[in-house]
Length: 604
Image (cartoon, rainbow, N blue to C red; front, side, top):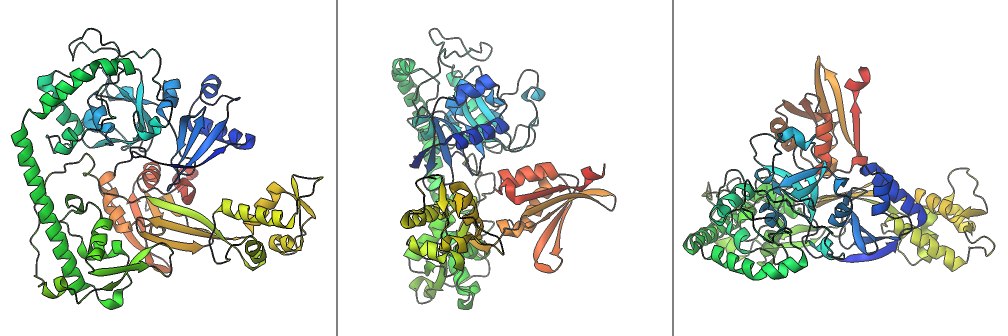
């Protein structure tokens, strides 16, 4: 899936100025994540400047502003990335990857970086430095000293074959994160011309030359299309974003060259309209046939496979187990996503969705309409006609879609804390975020007026608070600092973990079982054992097949002793480090929920 987070508009839900203690911790986290000199750190985060954190609505991401300029963003749980504004201040903040200039057009339309678009240095691949899966890199256009994007490597090495995806792009110049800043370009905007490949143009010191027009289409198709396809998809040729310039110009240069660019684009669009129309007709026919195949598969499933006693059922389960077919790709249909297909079936009243009784906010299929005319008239066949597949028309269709994983740490009050939550106007059966629990506490303290005037940083512990905080025979002092009180209060609540991937979710009281990765010697051979995949909605058998290809190693699965419903995975060879990176980067498991043990290293 595409990784660019800011290609669409977003909304900052809250703006909060960081306190001194939070600023100190944030700077420490940044210095741990990036290699910075004191001067560079002060350039990015001046000590006398206020740092404001903005929480992005509908996600776990945050943006950190200095002087109203976005400098860093947090993907989730302290996974920090610099913005292009930060990279313009300190270009050496991340190791660079250089790209051919036309590639930026595709990146600015939300595409990830493919291998053919990477410029290999004159000294060979070694000059790129060590490549590790998930490592952060900045993106420069070849011949430019200005970073234009940031992302993570999607591979552990770069081979001479130049196939597949190179980087997942998280943020780029001209996206909506860049637009929420000053939009000022760096000073001394200088781009070195490459006279060996492109003709030198007069008066264009601030832009990168295009390839010669007669070679432009061929060049773009080689760098942007998947390896198996040598034709640029029409949707990428024709639907270019108005805010995604093909050249990096200063504002003045953009005005002067706008007329010339318009003429060039119009000539390209007129180049081969017949071929474009033929491709559109083929695409439309394929979409229609895929839609029909999906609908037939659905009707076959609800008529022959799904029984009423199997309901309720998650929509994703219904689709993946009963509707999905290796010959039918939902991405080639008009629905594009499983959720849209399920919504359409509900609109047709072929099935009915209701909120799950066990999990709030999750809809499940509760009933199949077996009186529907389409259901009654459908006659299942032994084998449905397969839909012919086309080569992928997207830069990212050559990779399996992995839904984002969300792990929420929630809290519920125990009986001892009921009076506090009730006094604050909350139901005791609800689940709360950590910050919400602290807000409930302060509301109760305010209602009971428990902050003494002589000690404004402390709280007087009344009988209700004493009961809520008590653990065993522990004695609670009469006064507690606000910080100590908040920590104790939250620690006495019932912790609940909620794990969600796509439309599947489950909640677990208490600590969440960690994903265990252990490297050890077995029968004289190095191997890695993986346990706990199911808790993060990762199928062990599917992962085993992927690792077998990725690491060219033997893999097996077997039931966990005393828990036969769960599977553990074995992979030959010590692939502990790249496997850990794969779990965090591709499957989204937070590092704090991964327990890594290297028994091989400890024996040396």
